Length: 466
Image (cartoon, rainbow, N blue to C red; front, top):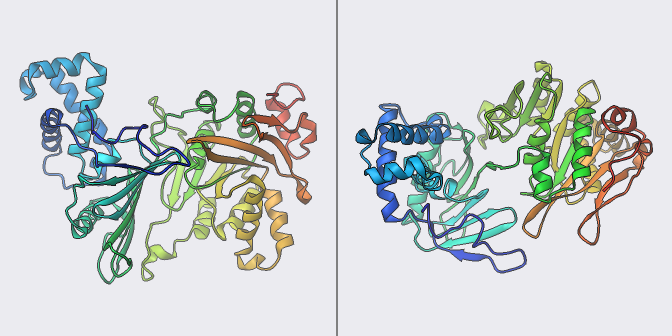
């Protein structure tokens, strides 16, 4: 068995119910001995290399290499022959054993019990013996059996992680600089704070964001998971091929980044996609699960997380990055998340020949997303106080808003809004009161801005019917 106590999907409080309370997961003793042998082999493979982010990013590959060698040469594996036989002939046993070995071989141990052993997206430390984990609208509180004996032990743990070679962001956590934010490659994003920056009973607070190891590769997966109906998926794919500029809106943890990654994967292989992010999350150049990257021609630039006012990284703002990104000659510009004056630079870029671009925004509704975008544009000094001009460039730059929400523990597309000039926006699809979806616009011709783009990519004059 893999790490016990925290099931991958079961054991979370259902929406509307009290948050479930669980103990920290553990690796059963009978499985830990085998996993430790494999983890030791991984360490031997690394030799004298100092602990690094690269080790963490290739962890699965390294463990699988050790397992493959054990199966090929059982006598040199150090494993009992029945175990080797199980690794060779039982896929489920092999997967569990690989997972256990990854947790023990990880430089993130013991947090690796959560990072690799449970299907999570967020880990929050509220104190050394009080942790909260969440995924897709579900939460659980971990109390008891904590691998950390004190708040000081948690602080020292994060200091060690921040010192890994290859970490980008803050690598110091002291009384003078009590908050650190950093990326551990593409594995996790960490924010940790200690006294005097935190108050209350605990001396430390931390948040660990785990990029979704999504099983969603394309829009058909969304349809299968009932996140959207098939006609909506057809329409979304047509929008990408038609090079419409798409704003993906939703609350925290609704899957905005995941959907944008899938849509980027639908772009023409000949398109050069330039990604601008405040901390790398999209990772379009990585394996999507079938041996191929999400998109091959990708250039990604990101801010370096830092709260230090005296560092050059602080001056590398999202607004500045958007301007630099245009020098890479993108066919499509992807902004990981709009939450400030960079929206003005994005809108300007979308109006000057970078059709087919995308960005995300926090908003509870598609129409509110446009209002929020206008407010962000007005944060730019050039548009301060000029709502009319800000609205004009947002409506010119954005063709479509796609909204996502968490409902009953699952992610769903709640609507697609076509943006028209003058505020006469049109819902194409919208979630109905009965929980399904409704087609709100029947004919492509009724979408005046989108119609010329969409016609070459859809059959007939009808918006795909539900």
